[in-house]
Amino acid sequence: MEKRFHTLRIISVILKVLAWIIGLFTVIGFVAALASFSIIPGAYGLRAGLITAILILLFGALIFIAIYAGAEIIMVLLAIEENSRRGESE
Figure 1 (cartoon, rainbow, N blue to C red):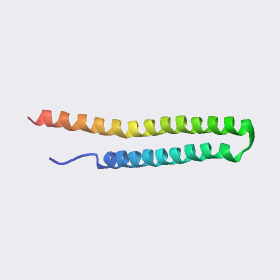
Figure 2: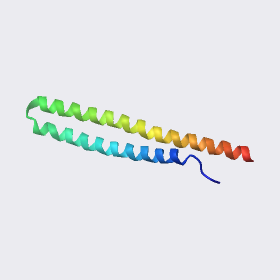
Figure 3: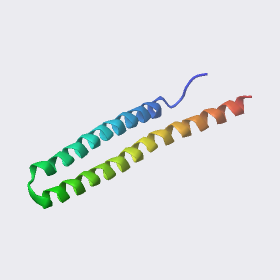
Figure 4: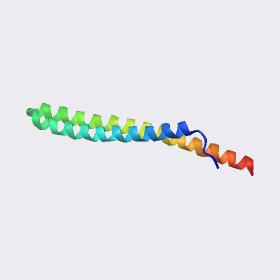
């Protein structure tokens, strides 16, 4: 059976790759923010680096989840379409 909506499948793959790239940069940013508080002297540097690291991790994770979920929603809709078409032909 021929697959339809090739562009949506490609968009889904691109979104998944983009989500993983954002996830990777989130981890790198988190580690860099944690390392930054050792560079800045005093308690203020510790607090600022820790808060920044937590915010980077939180927002990066939310963006990763949102983009990856969007890619999965596209795949679910395509699966529903395929199953609906298969049911009509039987």
